[in-house]
Figure 1: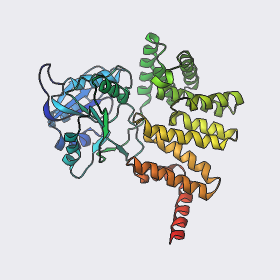
Figure 2: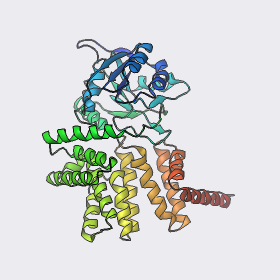
Figure 3: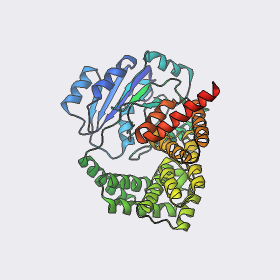
Figure 4: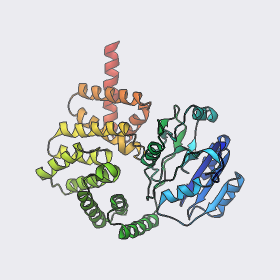
Length: 400
């Protein structure tokens, strides 16, 4: 941010926090250069050394190299401290600005006093940005992110907006401006390094539910099933101590419960009381795609199709109602929708058609394109996609 006592200049600053890869950095910088007045690059270790420094100098960027930190929010704050303009654009290095006239997309900034604006991300491939959302932030407000390994920016900014008595905390850009290129799969050494850092954090704070969730996810990526199972159990024990945990840590609790459901499915063990208990928990909390899909499969295993559909629809509503952009669209939206369609397809074509129309109505209401969802369905279930195509064509013939 600007120095204390000074006012940020009009304009926009690009902020990038780099970790271990730089393959798309040149494209990202090139795409955003026409619309920014300042570029800040924070290299958090392993970002590419001389290559990154050279690119930074080419774009006259402020470059700083800092030690790797498991606390992503701390790194974002390092970048914010250097910003000298009234708006900061946080862009992941695997994303590019992609609009015909970039300046027109930013004209919207002059019409809002909002602290932050979510930039809708269109998935060019499956999105994999686990560190932070692409986001425009007002720097003439007192903003400092809570320290967490992976920050939930929406919650932090909404609290700040409430504290500063802002009438509107967030607003959605009217035009899509960012294309996510999809992040490469992490290398094994990166995953093992993450496990070490998470375990150190848990030694200091064993009640950190989100850290148990991240540990379970990372261990699963390493195929260390015992460690993942242990992390899920430990995390759920912490959840049981805090009744309000689902409200404060919804993504982590949903993730842990989802992995617990997957473990039941893998063991083909479906105790009726446990399934009923999971459904009760889901209905009493803001259940999202992390939990809804495995719970849906578990409900299907015990022949409860209607309940399986119900939890998927609740997840879709939650994704839009709570603006959970910290969830990738694949997990928060696409998977629940496709599971619903798979169930409906096994019933009648009329039920599937009705469901497709309902989802299209929801997407249109929230200014999302149905094509991306259908592309996902085609990749993951070609037969389902063909069925949807057929019933849509049949319905059009009937109209003719």
